[in-house]
Length: 208
Image 1 (cartoon, rainbow, N blue to C red):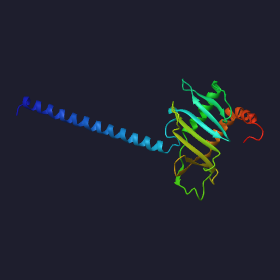
Image 2: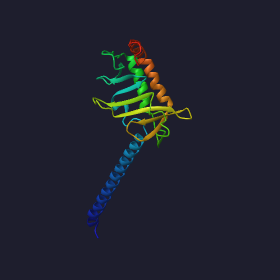
Image 3: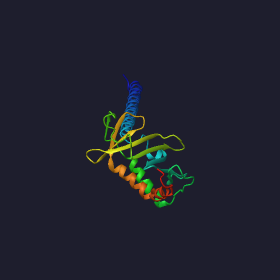
Image 4: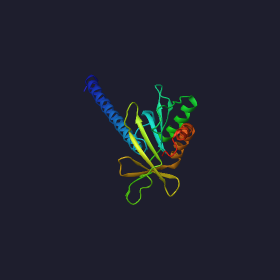
């Protein structure tokens, strides 16, 4: 067989090999992308918040009868919307850089909070403090009126390191690191404490 006859066959073989190599690379890339997506989904399932903090437009913390609302402005910076007790008609917005940084730091920490344990609980036997929570956490997507998720924050776990929580409407009780809750309470005190104290002082005598 002449060299001239072999050359087209060699070219055809190389074309087939290159095509197979391309298919293998495409399949491998698709597989890696799917695995990465599954890994990210599994990781997100272990997070307290169902979406990243960057996707949220507001977070409300209801504590001791006062609702503290934190929102993002048009530039994406967090600001304190004010303390609301249900009786006042006016409230202030604090948008200074120091306050924005303080809020952003605390809420970024909440965004990293991971679920430690989760279990089906018979709340008739032990409500873990979630039936009468000291703190409620409500997270909202941008420009949405209804919360994406609501958590009732209950008691400290026996190890004094974890805190019981329950998503509203869920039969499951979970735990997260207690310092995450301490950070939120510290944020309320640092940013909203003054307004909350003024609102409480403004209540008429004997008001609850």
